[in-house]
Amino acid sequence: MLRLSLADLPSLLECDSEACVSIYLSRPVNGSASEGFKGHYRALVKRAESVLGSNARLQTKTRLLNNLRGFGSYILEKGHDLPHGVALFASPSFLGWFPLPVRTRGAVIVSNSFHIRPLLPYLNPASRWHALIIGDDSSMLFRCAADAGELIARCSTGANRLRTKSTAAGKLERWVFERLAHPGAAPLVVAAPDDVKVDLDGLEAASILSTPFVGTDGATRGDSLAPTQLWPRVKLHLLTRTDAILTDLRKEYARGRATTRPEEVVARLRNGGIRALAISDEGNVRGRVDWRAGALCREAASSGYGDCVLDDIVERALREHCRIVHTDATCLPPGALLLAV
Picture 1 (tube, rainbow, N blue to C red):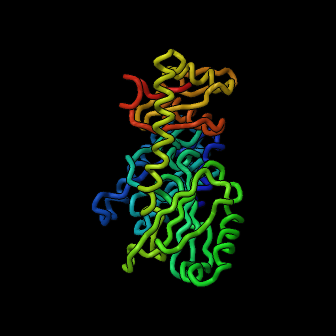
Picture 2 (spheres, rainbow, N blue to C red):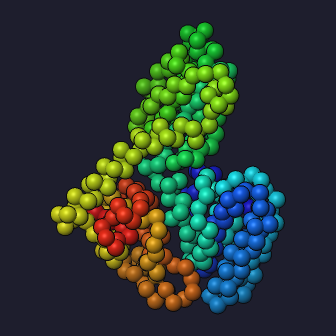
């Protein structure tokens, strides 16, 4: 049983099995109703069992259900560590879970691949960033995606050393560089006391954002600062990119160069002809994509599986390194669930 990190999430794209179960379990709003948490999970497993009953071989069904029930006992014991809920992914050869950074709509999807669209903000390269938080006695480096962050490493060079030792800044820069030598297009946010200056211009980062924090209470000291507290600052920076992509897509759509038809998007993706994609965070197009033929297979819609063309498109777009925007349907042309150019 694997607890998935942000770095592990892309591996979900590689699974293609006879039956893949994806469960999104949100914690009750009051947070303390453990029985409600248990009851909701059991209900979702029963729904998965119902779909598997008519669509999977007995051996596959038995193995999956045993995994799901065993996970239920494990995860309910850890319920206090899951303030927002959990996403569970199970196939005959894989079982992994990811603690949800925010509450999401409960769902169970049985398909031939995992349902990853709710996690698109954490899979999308455009949502990735890093945070360097400089506390009094140490510094912490985080890998982040959207509003979630995971600690990469900690070093003993903090604000106190940076104030008193001239060599400390160079040491800290080398320490960061060794861990972020190839951050790609991800911006780096440096949170430090306002009297501490750190020159990290040698790093290969899309941009370096400095965010000073002041004060003596625990909420504003670097030792207790969390990446989630930096997210509003980063979000404004990343939204500039998102708005630029959406603006570009709308202009191309007005000129007749962008499409909202899933069939055309599939054909263009198959040939590597999509450079930007905006996709709704809700809605469904039932069916599967045959990538060899570059066509939709809508007959799968009657199979009982939760097959979704949009999931297939997102998975392919991520593999092709397209620029992706996860957006509200109101930002797309009327009636559209996606827009691509």
